[in-house]
Length: 407
Image (cartoon, rainbow, N blue to C red; front, side, top):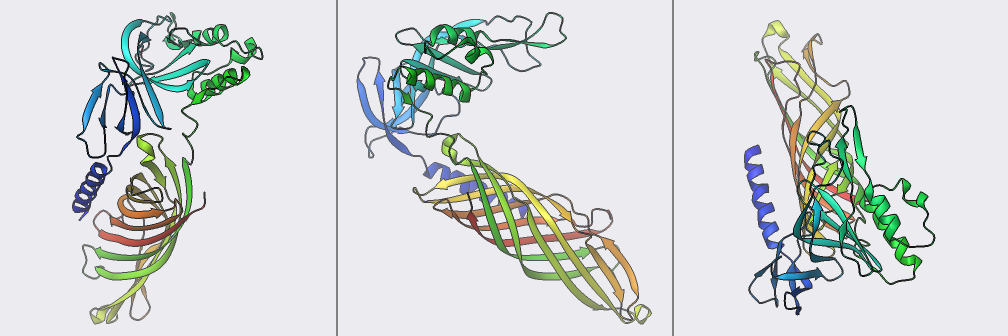
């Protein structure tokens, strides 16, 4: 069952991912300095691209443009990239690969730089699989890299940092309000650099474009999620007396989900964690030999806090509606739960402590207006008798979740 669900979810994700190829209004400038208005496939690149797909109209065939043929391209009100031939230092920031040379090692390359701030002073970003670099230009100056490099000192006892970017910015950002102190502890991080460039351009009352102003909003959601849970528990042991099928029970449960939206690929991916209270309580009586009182009463009282941690993928239908699919690993913390065996005459025979192993959960859902949630979730087999290696237990559940996002 678990394998089938994984296959089904994978097919659904692939189908919707393909169906959601969105072409948004944009433009590009070719090598002849001609501006071409078009529709560009917006995949919200996490790494700087070297090519992109576009269509001239909705009905046109898809074409591909490359860094060799395009000087600049942009998606309206979203992003902008410019081609530049420049020097870049690709020294690794991996602590296991640091060199003892604190100086950057430049090579000349042709890159698409992502424009972050464009104005009197402009800030750019370049990311690939292993490095992140920032670049800048002031007025009519050429674009150059802001130099930051980690290295191992000659003694090999500790790590050093080349923070030349601070001096570069001190020399080139001319806002009269800036003093050396403003740059002394500046970090090589997007958030701090953005703030600095915005301050500098505002200082001169110059118009500038901030392509990051709409980013990083609503990247955290907290939702309350009550649910109807149908659960079952089957115990299969070395003894027929202890074997019992407690059947299905339907209960109410409650979860509180924290969701962290990942700020790439148009916010389609997120990490979720959802502490959830659950309870399963049942009794079953089975006939046994007279030596055991004629019948055996089996009771289970199982309550716990489940903590699913997983990933979610959104499939946008329009500005208000979206489907989603999520996969989680579930850790379970029980509250002194047990399975009890009692003879028909009231004599206690045995009590098995419930201790659970990690299991998986798969969910499909719908969210409206970023507030209202409906989800169907299936949890795979959970072994609740992990302290008893010779016993087999099978607890699983299916939930109908109705949620509301608080913020």
